[in-house]
Amino acid sequence: MTDPAVWSEFAVRMAGTAFIVVMISWIAARLGPSIGGVVVGLPIVLAPGLGFMLFDQSPEFVSQASAGALFSLCATQAFLLAFVALARGNGPFRSVAGGALAWLMLALPLGMMPHNPLVGAVLFAIVTLLARRLGRRLISGQVTRTAGTNWGLLVLRGLLAGLLVGAVTLGASALGAGFSGAIMAFPIGFTVIAISLHLDHGGDFAGQTAYAGLNGLSSLATFCFCLALFLVHLPAGLAFAVALAASVLATVIMAVIAGRKGRSSHGQA
Image: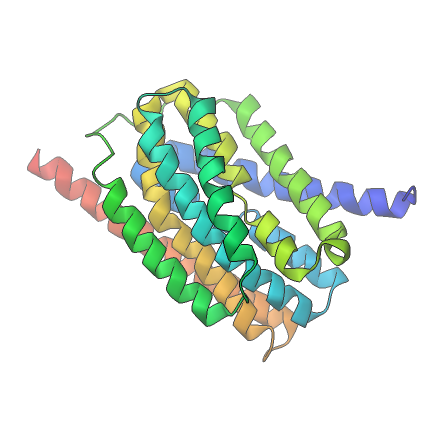
């Protein structure tokens, strides 16, 4: 446990993930809640985490971890919906705590199920549709776009996400495939950016970003689903590249749609 090589590997994984998280978070905050919530759905934690795991574990192991993460993303939708419901009338930490409780209540039973990727994809689609319908009644009207960037909180978000990835990927053998994927899919990235947005721009802005994130998580689900399927049939590197490309494509499509809706609403106003 005191092997310098192990700690060096941990530091590289943590720093690499943190850098990716900080840059994506900064871009998302500059784009406003509708597009920003979609961009936050990029696999900025899961992609580095599962990618590093491929260096240490078999493709079958990582495929199972990806399927476990897909089921956990259903619980993440519950996290976002609870945050949307609480953000307007409560402080950031209480809102995030309520979201974490909702995640835990759904993640625990889902973690005990067999993690079939097809079943996970169907379940995610159903949960997303329900969450979108319920969340639409909870968000407020138009809010202003973000102006400043709180670099301290962005760096904290990156470090927390990097710490999670480093710890889970190095301890994956002990945790097991399904549990590793489920823990890695916990919305720690959104947890910190939600607190940041709430403190800097208010509960309305943070809630609208979380609501947009309900769609944005489809990018993460796409990544996990493709990786779980393709790792069984394709070389590991190719499977990872295809899954990542599919995820980015999903985000681009959703961002374009969100942008067009935003321009349409401004034109009508």
